[in-house]
Length: 464
Image 1 (cartoon, rainbow, N blue to C red):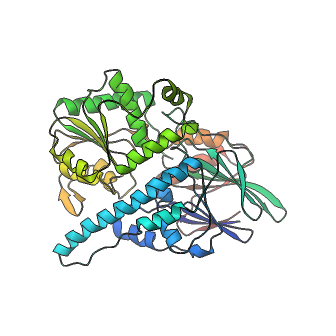
Image 2: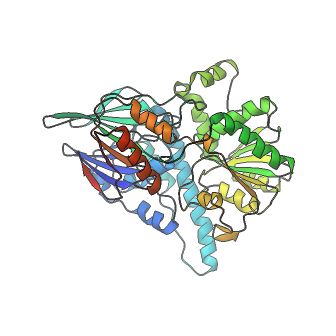
Image 3: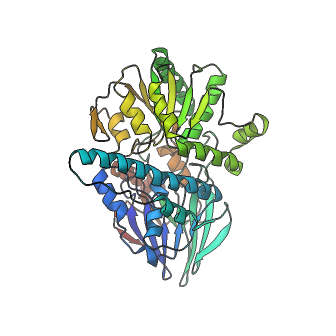
């Protein structure tokens, strides 16, 4: 078996790994690169292989940095199956279409700006029709069900606890006279987080490929995060400001709404208008309600006895662009949750442009922002920042709460690796910036001294 590391190697975007085994080519993940715009666009437009030669595609979960370039893959010739869980399939149906619409809207906006300078227009990466074509190629499998996806290669999903439908990918392989188990962790969630079940354990692992987003950092205590949320929001709302929250439409938005519901009921956060301004977030929340099989016992009980855990009287979900624009006219204190979490696309960039220079306001990040993204620039204290090519001074308060992240922290990742069964002989560390990946690899060498631990670079090929 050979694995080509084509994305999310010493970085956290553009997840893509090509597995060659028994004469078949299997692609794990097909994510969008995010970050430096010209570099990202170039990588997203060109694959380092011919999509038409693939035999199967396997997707661990629906986040755009893992799934977002599937329409390009199918547009360029892939006609086979895309294997995922049922919830991932349903989320991707709305997320990929939304991605296409966001790209079209952003390309039109940027093209208008470029026209003023006499520059040619830019084209979106793919269309809504391309996204719909990709959605028709999904084949859904539930957790702990096995399916043959290539000669002598059997696929099984286990819950990863990261977002709704997220999975660890198990490939049981017979190659010649060898039988072995390859495990791709996907993105591993935090134990005991709201809504979702904890990551499942996997036995008999020979080759582990593991994420390292927080490979050198711990999260704050989950209990402290609620106190921080109350403190941040109460201060901003108390001074008459708005709270702008860039949040991933799938996962963090639902988690934040769920927590705000509880805090408002307890009187710990002022009951001001809350707006979820993202068509994708609205659609994704509807998908959440359809997949209670992914919920932990507390959320399932809430759904059974109290009704929708993602709704409350002071909460408004916004789909239409006209309603979104009206939020610019709101002068009273309010909370606006909008995608994307890294502030790289979507309506959040308009809300940031309109609110980031008002010192009364709060820009609150509740998840990870990859290096070079707008979110990372804001969190890092840069000012001014460019939004749609226009510089804006950052005068609003900037807050960050790591405990709401859907990624396991360092000790949680190590506990996950320690709990895996089997004589793991090789480990590749992926989906982390270089420093966290290298630090986590060193910790894994101490935890699993029998294993060869590698931190691949983009384009590297590793044999097993």
